[in-house]
Length: 179
Image 1 (cartoon, rainbow, N blue to C red):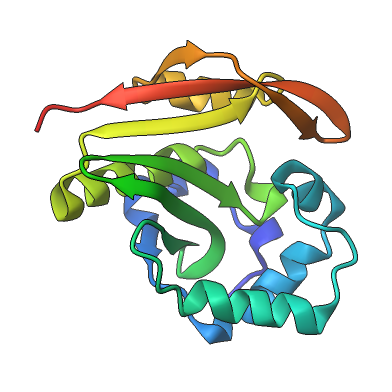
Image 2: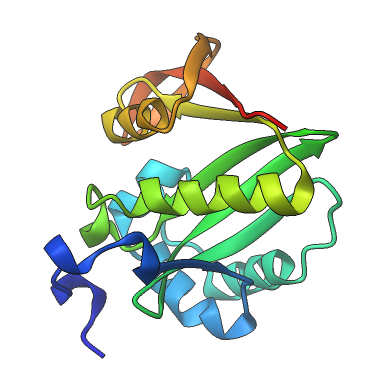
């Protein structure tokens, strides 16, 4: 299989080539590679130059998650782990969603959009979630556009934090789906 950064995207990419799946310990090497990408780390608030042993322990915790209000799944593109999707603060019929594409060469290709569609479908059908919350940085125009294209509406602008090395306003979004 070709490395992720040389995959042709264009017409080959469709929602059928994207899948959500459980995380596994064998994903660690991929996660280790993400941890060495300064752009990914900066965009996702990951510590740069993270100790590999500490990162491995954190990954084991992710794989063996036992929290009742949090689910993290891997995002596969053409059979290769390229990111992760989260459902957090699951309570009743609501949850917060989040995604991270670890392969920065794949940013802006629509993978986040299709991954989020899959996450919404899973959460709706399997967990009965009808209210989805999301948050992104004002300067993260790709994420903002994706959320808006999925039907999320801006509900507030509370807080700020660093994104790609600069302080950025946080924007909160919500999507309500029919039960």
